Length: 201
Image 1 (tube, rainbow, N blue to C red):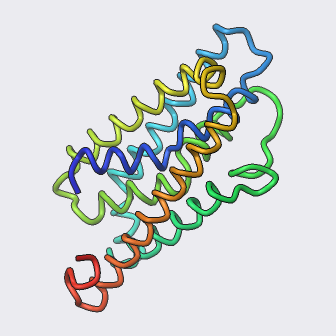
Image 2: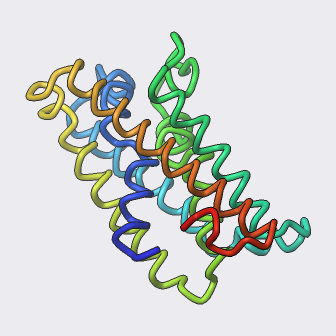
């Protein structure tokens, strides 16, 4: 996986366009300056959490004696479920009901930005190829910057694109994530069965 493809995968998982309506509802009623402060704080927390999982997640896997292909299969299943929820969102929203008040860590940083799928994806990258931590960190940073830029312009994008277009884009992202998750599952299964590239290729 190249830096560009890893960054694209992480960008799709972070799902900034799908998060725009939720973020707007959470920040509604706050002064514009306070909205920016909260958004910066929550995005930095999300980046910190994802970086921790990227760099130290593999040690947790070693501690639990989990094999890399097990993580690949599990990650594929998690991504598949997230993708399905993006395509067919439940009535209470992608991440369930959200508490009132000013958000702090939950739900903006976790799980809307740094969700289970993002944590699983970066942990998988770090555990499969630990020698490329610099590349994975750069890919995560690129995806995070793109996500932050979109969320900072959420108000303008919502006015320009509208709710229906954003919903359609989220469904499309869900389809891409489902396809990626199936590939991850097949790659992990092929490695476990000793098939090499027989399934993935």
